[in-house]
Length: 75
Image (cartoon, rainbow, N blue to C red; front, side, top):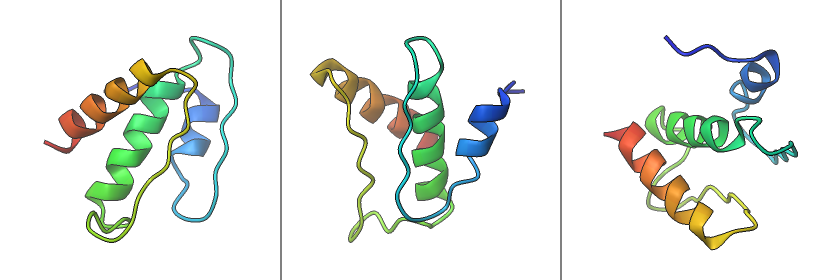
């Protein structure tokens, strides 16, 4: 069972429109955004062929982490 903080729970209720998340290092941003992206794709809120989820990050290495974690969660 995943234990979420209240701020993470609020983020995971998002379903459409724009969403910005700003947080300090170690706050669970990668986990929360990965979980949210996989949920939106998995539940059909995002059409894999005609829509995209944009996650903007400072480091290129983070891109690989997001891709791998989203892919893993969808499997």
